[in-house]
Image 1 (cartoon, helix red, strand yellow):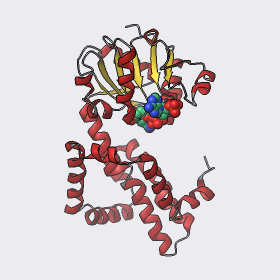
Image 2 (tube, rainbow, N blue to C red):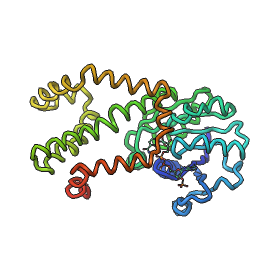
Image 3 (cartoon, rainbow, N blue to C red):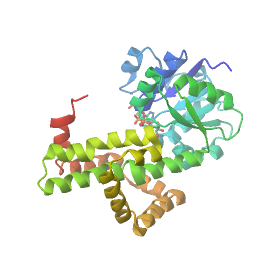
Image 4 (tube, helix red, strand yellow):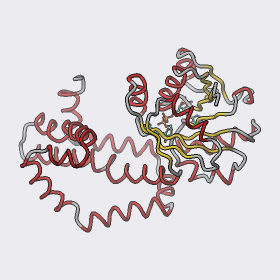
Length: 307
Ligand SMILES: NC(=O)c1ccc[n+]([C@@H]2O[C@H](COP(=O)([O-])OP(=O)(O)OC[C@H]3O[C@@H](n4cnc5c(N)ncnc54)[C@H](OP(=O)(O)O)[C@@H]3O)[C@@H](O)[C@H]2O)c1
């Protein structure tokens, strides 16, 4: 199948990596931005064809990749529907949230909705493409007529491992893992242990190294060796201590908390919480709160510029 061009909407974190990868793979990449977008000159400097929503949009082809924040996708789809005949158009999402949240299959039945969700932050997506390392993505083609398009596009993006799943699987698992492990347990677990050691008078750089820096070493080993290899690898003290701690921490109450996170995601309660929350204000509160810990300043002074 010949795929010669794609239109990326937005020029944020993911869009920059997608645009660079697809362009380097020989695709003509168009960018669709707001007329007032501060990214227009940057995108032009990167050699991309830039269009705004005020331009004639039929010239942009059949493939539209939504790479703006998830809560803007329904507004953008509405705008596109006013200016384009959506019949035969492909909307591609890097995460399934908006497709489910705004019921796109029902709202735009004439569109071919496709999921191509790289399981990588933007910098990894670009770096791994350049170094030709493994890149995993979840793909979904609910109407079952675009497997070739997804195959070609994901190859050009640099995806090497493709998981065929549903929008719901990708979205719910993504939200659940962010909540239960990636953006809670890891950073806050590390911080709680760091702050605890500081209170006990431990040298801050030692506490930082043990609680924050070593997270990466452990995560790398988990991935490289798998569970079996990992538990064979760790020292007897780490094994005995880890097992003692996991029995203490992961009790019935912990299981109930996982159930509660899942219930909110699967019932739509979490969607309402997202609607009610001003993310920018919350981000500022979080940043202010982290300043109460010594961890950010130890990171800045001790580690930030190390490579
Ligand atoms: N970040 C990740 O690591 C990651 C990983 C996997 C998947 N994803 C998915 O990738 C998608 C993009 O995420 P991201 O973090 O890369 O987004 P992002 O960096 O926050 O996107 C910023 C871009 O979106 C544009 N934008 C914002 N609101 C807009 C609106 N109302 N109309 C038109 N353009 C608008 C901005 O335009 P201006 O230039 O005009 O300001 C800017 O170019 C999301 O679906 C996300 O779930 C993200």
